[in-house]
Length: 96
Image (cartoon, rainbow, N blue to C red):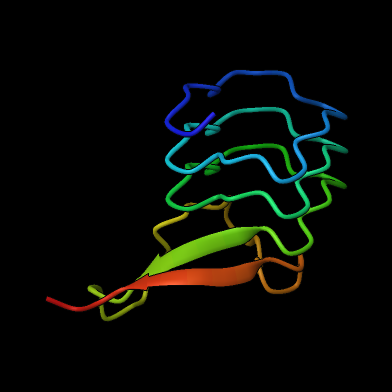
């Protein structure tokens, strides 16, 4: 499902364990209570997604080192802490 446009999908309670969602647009998806353990979220857009009670343990995300602020390449909702949610950093883009 990488590169998929799931921007308005209702995936509440879905079992997406281990799915490759790299580069997917999940920007406004409802992922409440979804099982995303071990999912690949590399460069995924989750900016306004509902992640309430979603299980994200050991899901992979990435960050960009090209920006001095180290903005995430995987985009999360405001005030979302991927470390606290149990995600693991998978890849860092080397500076150019």
